[in-house]
Image (tube, rainbow, N blue to C red; front, side):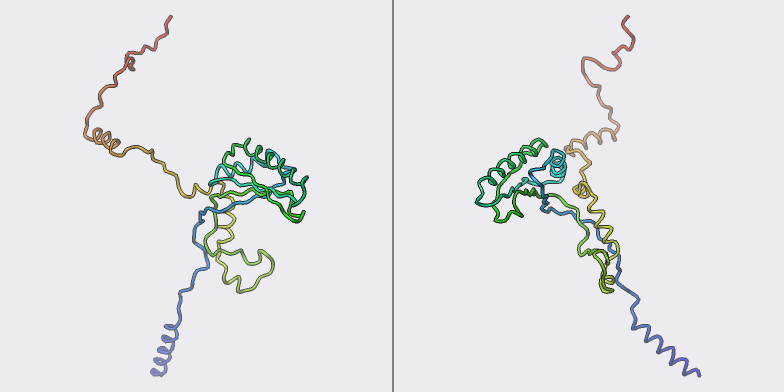
Length: 218
């Protein structure tokens, strides 16, 4: 009986040694990324309002990089359509100029079909917040999905996607310099004099604190 028990124990030890208790985590721990990406906004030139232009201009001022480009389309070989596009281009330029956009270029492009005509596309490079690399949508987001998709999904990706879309100023995630741009050696001399016990000399001027009277003058 003792030999049988020893053999069974050895078999169990060998089986357990072949198993790995380490499993890859399905929790996404990567942070939100910051990238410069081209942002595009479709607008209807005929119904563009100051509020719409203001919303686009606000994001451009906050996150934009470089020049804002606007393309206005019109039906090819139609003089009246081209004339409307010219008028709309002036209207768009004036609307964004009123919102403080100075670095801007408006172009016109001819198209063959009316479906793509009389529209405008605003584009500019902007700092954009993005979810971590290799993040996919949550299984079932676009309908039914497979078990393989659920097994490959990293928990937390959907949350990171939602958070990245809510960040108004992505550049803030890169950090801000909280120290003034002073000369370090000059600041060091002030600190060293204070640490050594050297008293500061009185400030010279026409008026000092001890010579100013606080009483009323009659």
